[in-house]
Length: 147
Figure 1 (cartoon, rainbow, N blue to C red):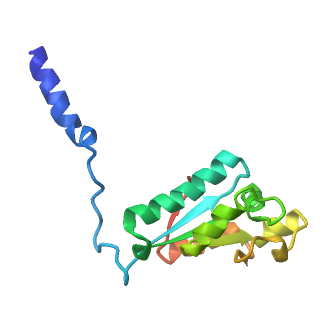
Figure 2: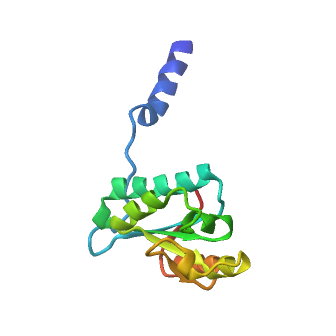
């Protein structure tokens, strides 16, 4: 009886043990129908910042660069990772931008910390409110992820 229980456990866990692949929802992502994912960057902790950047890379690896649009919306402490004079990840941001990852900073946060859009890394766009940007993108069909 014990052997039968072990066998059933192995069979139930087999997909996880075998590295089961994610099943893509229909319609499948493609050049004309890319997945749209927006990642929240809301803390200045280096581990959080790096995690968000790795998530962007992993999304492009999984779907293929032409099959996914990735945006990173920074607000609160996350904006500091995009300030030209403070960013510890400026090279990574530039690299991801070269792979068409979009970076957006919260204007309200910039105002609160006494900074201007010109203080940001090259190519970072600014919206009035980062949270509102997340809401509007979600309503436009983007999947919002808070890593």
